[in-house]
Length: 327
Length: 282
Image (cartoon, rainbow over all chains, first blue to last red; front, side, top):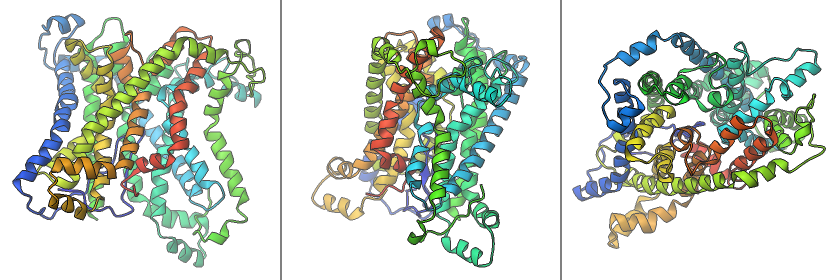
């Protein structure tokens, strides 16, 4: 298995959390026989990173699973006597009144963010794909929200959405709409964190979809224009269908990463008021770290549900990507 | 938006000024929150609750920035140290791995690459809980090395992929020539592969630094309350403590955004290389 040369249109990209997102294409042909000494050398070079993978990914994951199957308190960390309770923590979590709302919010948050990030990102990619002065510079500027630390974005949005002194409400007032308690009312808190997260997610969609647009041959558009197809028809009959593979990758990846979003929600609303913007990610943190008396077991249980969901979609993503490499 | 995607003959540039204007407007809308952060950071405290808020810092003040210098320097220092440590650890782990995966083709290398892809999908909050449990027993909570190791998990998988992709492009003949001259794998890596991969090292370092600098999840679970806290926690505690001094909060946010701004201005090429990795060409 090795990385072959890339076709120009298949590039690794990375998302907001910086995940690199291209599986190395697998070389189906048998690799050239390599001498044993080289095998040893290769694994010597890989030893540190393999050890690292076991210690710092596999082991925390295992610890988390273990946490969720025992009755852990801070005391048991110190004394190491946490009784094994099996699936009791999961039962506790399922019966918790927060479970239903957290599930609904996670689904809503993910679906709405994805839809808008993709639609806005695509519209912008199509726009910037034209030739005009400054287009490259402006496109680079669009990366800013993606590069900013999340705490910066979250606190800026918090202040913009402030009920009394926020710019958003004063603009609404200026056009005759009453102020909205964006972050402090249960009706609006989820909407507020969705808006902020869309703003953060647009640049990634723009960049990836733009690189997808660049691989569509211009001759197709010329032919369509000769046939008298208008801009709208050219988009729906050429751009959109040909972008489908890139769109699938972008959306699946966005799905995996939107499921995990924690910082933005926690910093803006802490999942409140009254759990109105709680998702699995914030609920898990809340249980484990957000209270005076940590409930590590249930917190880890919620987190593990999130891991299962993320990995399930993640594997779908990897499959789709494999398929695209193959074709 | 129903703009056509036109093919790009060079002579079509003229007569598109309205597209430039549209582009400027869109960018201005997108970057408005960034402008607002700057505006608020220069606003006087007595003007902070004005209704409607001032669109420009007419009576600009550096109060907010004074607060940053007075209170946030240790936090910035910690973030800098943790960021540089993360860069060093990430490159040290990932560059040899990339070389092995790209050029030495070990059996099982594909499985390892796959595991790294999967590793990136684990929610950070889960990693944080696992790390918390481990650090609690090891006594590594609230320590700089602990934070460096945790933050490096954000960047290592990405780094391995970038190095593998980049080093695959190094011509085999070069490595064969080195071998003929009697250089072993280590010598080849150190004297040929690594110097040639300078761009990949820069790209990886930039992103590793940026993600470590921006990290909030690990900071808040593993470092909060300790003697060494990064700037993300500085801002977070600010928000919690004094809801009145938003100019100071926003000034800290501006300062915390500087690395991102510098990277975008000075190293845009490398950012682009990172976002569309594998298209890296020297």
